[in-house]
Image (cartoon, rainbow, N blue to C red):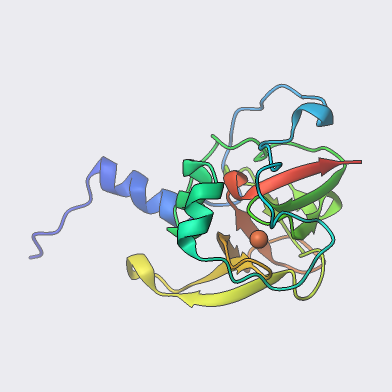
Length: 182
Ligand code: FE
């Protein structure tokens, strides 16, 4: 008989790591104006651009100086925000989502869908090279990690349980995103 047992705390952690299901119930946050939905002041970040798609090769030591601690942790230490805590998990504004680290345009808002998993979910990237994909075998699972195609920041994971037309679910940390309203 195995001595391994699943405690409620461990179970909650595993569910968090697995990025939740797309069928759970979640409380609805009040609607906000799109003007209130920017997260960061990028004026001190010389690499931030919505139009420059040239690849960046910035040392981690520089990113650490430029970025807020929570963004650095998720982007370059592969952290995961707690479900239902991010700014965009149930936000439905019209516009574009960019990488919060470098400004690279990642998703159009019309590819966002209500997955109720607690993280912003999209069925399609903004363009072919916007996002890069990597096998992730951590935590005893085989998943596909998503990173920014321009700066390499960790974004989240992609799963095959999304809606039509792609059937994919990009499960992305809110902290990694910056919303640009139309
Ligand atoms: Fe980026």
